[in-house]
Image (cartoon, rainbow, N blue to C red; front, side, top):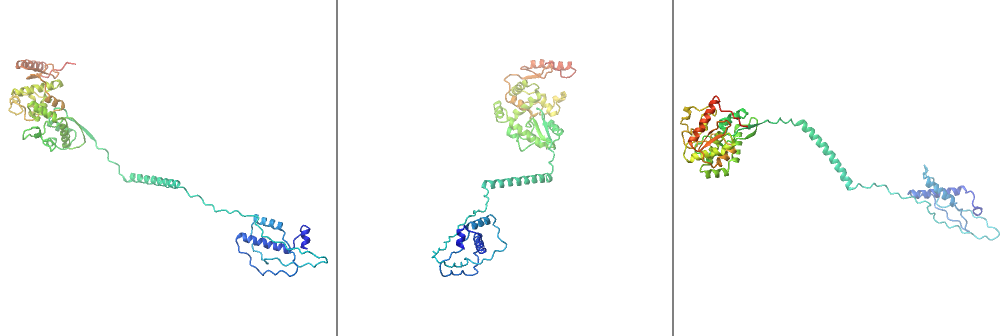
Length: 411
């Protein structure tokens, strides 16, 4: 029957052949899935003795089609089918015919090759982040955390830090050239400085008058309190102002002035005294060096200076006319009576007066008196007779003006 089926191009398969094909497919499917081979229910039967019989071949094309269909839809059955055996049942031999038949050997079965090799897919592993990406992420995180921390600190600072106190007001204390200690004390009090300026300006550890040739027992720092504008905090002690003035004096009276004093034959303290007289006697800058020349000329000739401002310093009066009794007083500051310079400076000179005292004009004048025009200039002379005429003219102008200094008419 098998031969007739092959010769006729194959026909319908028997139920037994379909079962074997199905078992073969199941076995191959389990092999592909990695399952162990099916258990053998019974050992294969030995082939029957006698002439070789043809085994019923399996339709290869149908098997391939079914295997391909299973690969496209690999759905395993709910329960694996029962495996009958690993080898086909023996074929019943066909009765021999009269004519000799050449026995056809059974076809040699070769292992079927898989029609489909499934692709081997490796599990997808995402590439690791690069080092730069990781560092960037860390940097962004740090920046965010830093911003949060800064905001927290600012918020906490605003809540916990009290408002700063208002700035302390400052004041400017302006001391004119030629002011005395008493006048500066009144000015410091009016500007709101605390403490006694007169007490603070008697002596200081920052300046020793003896180093400038002042005699022993010099009572105070008159002459060393340099006039200028000082900016201080409101309510500053007066001693602070004194300290600032002494520092400014050292800046304006140094080695050059000390050397000039030696050239002029006086001590630095005496040169400072001459400068203090110039500040009180001179109203016009041009006259400073001329007045200094008169003072040094009279000192060399051992003449009395006859300067009224020295006596006014002792009297604490720089405005009212001097009386005959005052002019005849025995005060050491009365230079009409006593020769030489007064015992101390009579004011606190500025830089211009100190310069004039250090560099007097080279003239032979011995006298000067205020001009009759009232413009503040002094009239200088070398003889006493000329001085008397100049003085008479001044007295006449004052008398004509009702006892007051004449008004200047110069432009």
